Length: 479
Ligand code: FAD
Ligand code: NAD
Image (cartoon, rainbow, N blue to C red; front, side, top):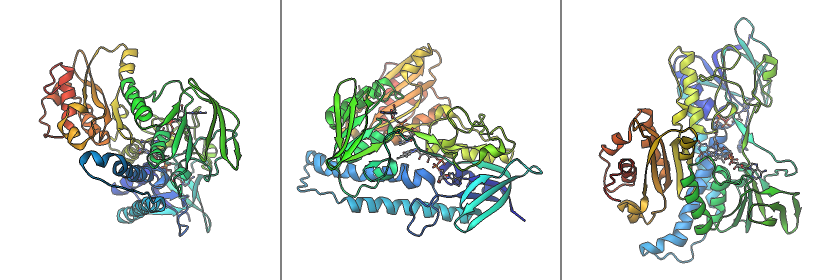
């Protein structure tokens, strides 16, 4: 007889592994199916999905290493520190990144053990429609196939890189995120297609380490999803100060590859020519991963973009089948997937789990970092919402001056009538951490006056958040 579970999760990325742990915590017999080994040296499946293996975690490790290198090479001097002959050992940097990944992925294995989640190694797929109100899920592993039986199924199969026709990724010269996180030396010239989050983060890594980096972006606007003031400041810093070459409105032609490297003809709003590079990173978005799930056999409905169609509670069109994370609509962010995983497990338990998609923060881990929550000024204008804005630069902050890092600002947008905070936008050092205060404030329905009346430690960068709230009411104290 097939092994029986209350909950079977397909996919062990942030959406799936968190859903599995929470379901087990709530007392359900739970299994999680994962197929990918992500080149594990022992050939074992690796937990943590894109995020831990080839996404958030390894990219942030490389961003940190490259930032230290950049600091030692260019910024220590202002503190009176002379560091001559600073050298980069790329294999050590990559090894450190891999160690962090291993530590975290094995950590999820331990969490599964601790919470009594059964790990099933293999590809999970629907076998057909529900029988006696239970789903049969096939697990195709290294040693053959088996079928498990589940009352609830949570699809958490994530996403994969979007491909461009005529540009075949081999993860040697032409790379998606997987190859671009594992170069064994600093390439002389790096080309990037797509000035989105991955293009900017990984472009920054290799630029800091000495590559000449050129990014081709199809859209005429830079960082169109961010607040326009933030995008403008980021453009200035990334291009003029840091030397990233970014061409907007770029149309690319037929790629060539030869001894001299890769040639990519393009025409953009400001230039036309051939982008010549030694490594090309293709980062043009990600697509939901429903390959091999056999959802069609069960009648699982997808939307026009190939994402699993769900309602606000991540319920699909099928009874007791749920879907979370990158495979469903919404921003492709690890923390969004994790929250959905918790919500689904709690709803299975009859609790009132929910996710407030309006307060999901965004962070881009460039330097300066960019982070925001809520609406941008252009969105408020388009929706005809009356608002007040307060914007304070880090240059007016003692801690930022002490750190020698004063780029950027905090901008707070609040409703003109009620003063409720509608959006907060940060570009500057530690924006990723600073945004948490704004998320909490918005989650609690705070007004700018609430933040203005909270005591913020001195001297800290968080005082810029405080001052931006005061600035909404045109009464900043230090600017
Ligand atoms: P995934 O993490 O993609 O996991 C899905 C898992 O399901 C995979 O392990 C896959 O092998 C498995 N699977 C698929 N089909 C099957 C099947 N049929 N059977 C069994 N297993 C299956 N997000 C952030 O919030 N912050 C960041 O800083 C950040 N940085 C990123 C950097 C890069 C370079 C990339 C590529 C992404 C980054 N992201 C970041 C996005 C983040 O990684 C994703 O949003 C997140 O991993 C989505 O989680 P998920 O569980 O939905 O899917
Ligand atoms: P993205 O959507 O952020 O950016 C893709 C960019 O490629 C867009 O600006 C798009 O206009 C451009 N583009 C598309 N087709 C093009 C073409 N033919 N030529 C030139 N440009 C083209 O996608 P991404 O950078 O690939 O990242 C994928 C997802 O991973 C992100 O949406 C994000 O959700 C997630 N991610 C998050 C983080 C983070 O949270 N810090 C970091 C990395 C990735």
